[in-house]
Length: 103
Image 1 (cartoon, rainbow, N blue to C red):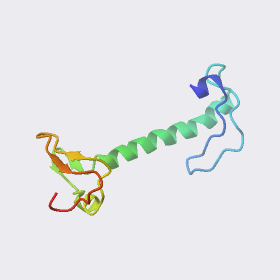
Image 2 (image 1 turned 180 degrees about the horizontal axis):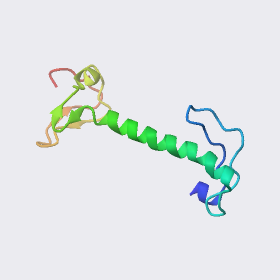
Image 3 (image 1 turned 45 degrees about the vertical axis):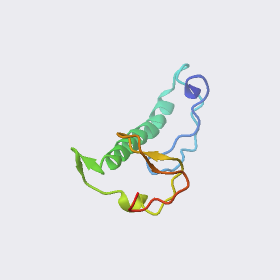
């Protein structure tokens, strides 16, 4: 919404360098050719980053098969809130308790 009514501001190049010339137009007024070209850098980078992050998050389970276990990440952490079994609704770990192999 901000870029529709206000200025778009500074854009970044694909390698996180800031383009010095800000885009002072918005989508409502329309961008000139230079501003449009500069804004495409950020749009392409945003789409690529989204695609890459989505692939990484889906790598733990692929087609119903566990590819990577998260056990080492979860063990020895303290629960921030009560953790319940989603099927039986049984309390597994109370808030503030250490998560270990027995729980």
